[in-house]
Length: 115
Length: 111
Image 1 (cartoon, chains in turn red, yellow):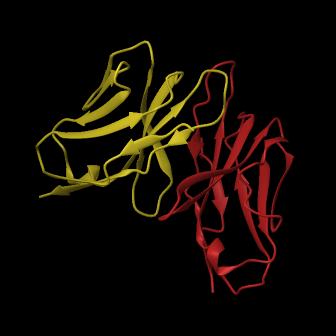
Image 2 (tube, rainbow over the protein chains, first blue to last red; image 1 turned 120 degrees about the vertical axis):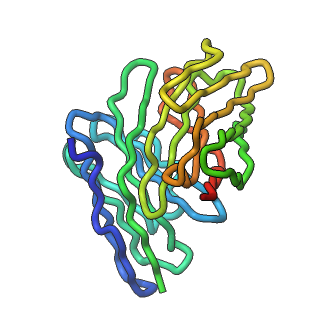
């Protein structure tokens, strides 16, 4: 299996521009997570989808952030407009969720730099 | 709220054992995980332990859980330079999707 795929791996953009990050989860997984990693705040869960439906978006920092999952094999995280404080590594993770257990597999991440 | 704490740095010599420690506060934690993050990469699940276990061994890795003290440790035997990475402890509760991650421990292996 190819694992979780994220693109782009690196993104440099100017403040005010729209940024779209993409994720392809592991085939057959029914849960998808978007995380943000920074030195100051560590790993933060931004949003969680189950069966393509957003279940918990309480971690999305502002209305500038939005996420979609149009089908089981694709998700996007969009930031519009971007700001320098959005600079971070964004990870997508997926899991096959059972009744009790959520073993998450992470993608390689997208390093976002907003200048 | 729930919290997971780790020391920030650990330095060991190649061939020695490494012990990375983690404490957590949520007494209802059911699963505890160790993830490894190499530079420029995502988090890789190394191992996990159920809260009803005291120990789990997987090749060079040994996980010890002291549920009374809410203390988890990861021992890496015969540490190699390829083990240099950041190690994250995480916990979750049965029936929930949310992981609580620690801050990560940066392991440096000296040749």
